Length: 334
Ligand code: UDP
Ligand code: MG
Image 1 (cartoon, rainbow, N blue to C red):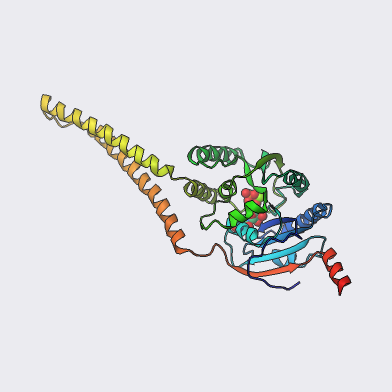
Image 2 (image 1 turned 120 degrees about the horizontal axis):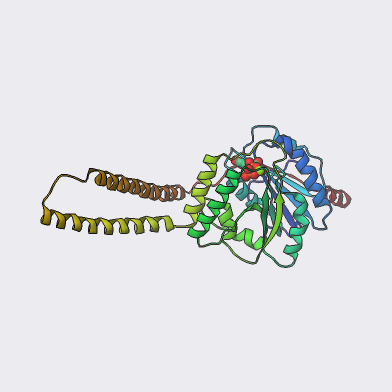
C-alpha cells in the first residue's frame, strides 16, 4: 500500500470500470460512501477500481481512505497538493484512471452508487456517454432550482455544443471519450461542457438526486456565478458578438437621433432643454459600455490564464491498494 507513481497511467484492459470520486473535506460521509460503493462494485462481474482524488482536504478524509480495508476493487488515492477545485480534481482522476468505462461520482452520496449497474448496461450496449439527469432536485431551494433552470436556458442559447440540462458531473464515459477529454489542452475546465463536447453516442437516464448525506455543499452563490460565467465564456464567443450588435444598434439610433436634433435646431433654434433625456441616454450608454468592457475583460482574462500554460493541478502523492482478489492471485503465484 505504498507505491507512488507520478505519471498518468495508461488504460489497462484488466480494469473494466473506474469510478472517480473527487472529494474535499468529506470525512463524515466517506466511510458510509465507501461501504455503499464497494457493496455495489462487489456485485459486478467487471473488475473495478476506485480512484479517490483528494482535492486538498484539511480534515482526516485522506487518512480515512488510506486505511480502508482492501475490497474486491483496486483503490487508488490521489492527493493534490492543495485545493484546486472540483473541475481540476475530476481532470486528475480522468488522467489517472485505467478503466474502459469511467464513472464520476460525488462523495456526498447525492449520486446514488446503486445506479452504476444500470449505467454499465447502457455502456455494454455500445453507448459512449451515459448522462444522468436529475428528475428531482431534492433538498435544494426553489431559488437554486430557478437559477439553475435559467442558467441552462441562457447557456444553451449561447453555446453551440448542446449541454444537457440538469445533468451534473455524475455520468459514465467510455475510454475513447476519456482519451479525447484528456487530450484537450485548455486550462478553463468547465467540465459539463467538456463532457458534452466530444459528442459520440449518448444516452440519458433519469434519476432522483438525494439530498446531501451530511455536511454542507462547497458551493455558494458567488462560486456558482463564477462557474456559470466560466461555462458560457469557455464555450461561446457569442457575448462578444452580442456586444458588437448592441453597440451597432445603439450607434445607429444615436445617429438618427442626432439627425433629428440637428434638423430641429436648424428649423426651430436652440432653446436649452432636454436634461432628462440627456441623462438617460448618457447613463444607458455608460452602462452598456461598462458591461461590454467587462465582457471583453472576461475573455482577455481567460486568454491570460491559457497563455501561462500552468498545469491544471499538482499531484502530491498517489497511493495504490490492489484488490483483495488480486492480492490472493499474487500470493498464489509467489
Ligand atoms: N469537491 C471537490 N473540490 C472542491 C469542492 C467540492 O472535490 O473544491 C467535491 C465534494 O467533496 C463532493 C463533490 O465535489 O464530492 C460535489 O461537491 P458539493 O456536494 O459541495 O457540490 P453540490 O453537490 O452542492 O453541487
Ligand atoms: Mg453535493
